[in-house]
Image (tube, rainbow, N blue to C red; front, side, top):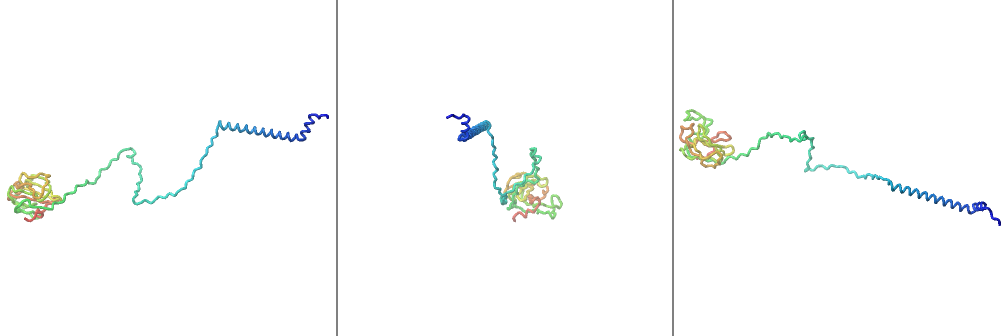
Length: 252
């Protein structure tokens, strides 16, 4: 049998089963080429990601909290409201210490002792001259009529004179007219005054005495009453005002 030319045989093959075989090969070639191309692109993208990693910034969404109504509780009776702070004064801004104005309120005075409640006679004797501020009395020494702000109690020179009540000796003086004079404070503004004493009394200013304590002796130092018999001149004062000593002394 005579063989057909190669070109003719190839043509017949392609017209028969060969067409499908060739088609399958082409599809396979296309698939292989596509797979290779896809793999190449993936490798290129992977290298880029490694050399320059992309930074992805994720912003968290803000959380929403439940809004509670602001209710200020009513202040209780024990709570104190802080005063509003005022703007600093010029002295505070410069750091200077403000000067405090002197207070005009008077200093507290010490409480005064109550007046003595017990009184006694300074000595025993007859009253030569009574207390008289409203009616003028005749003064034998001066030879005129004048007031008499005490009582004169007759007693010999040298007779001891006692304090009429408890108190503190306020002063010991040498008066030009009434001679040696001792003043005792008995509290409550009450004072007793002993004049015409002997030159040397038995107490000093500041001494504390009790009723009946000896403070001196009857003398002859009162020039203003030298014409009378030896006696003690006794005065009583309340807040500086002369009062009748007999109102404080018990009956003899």
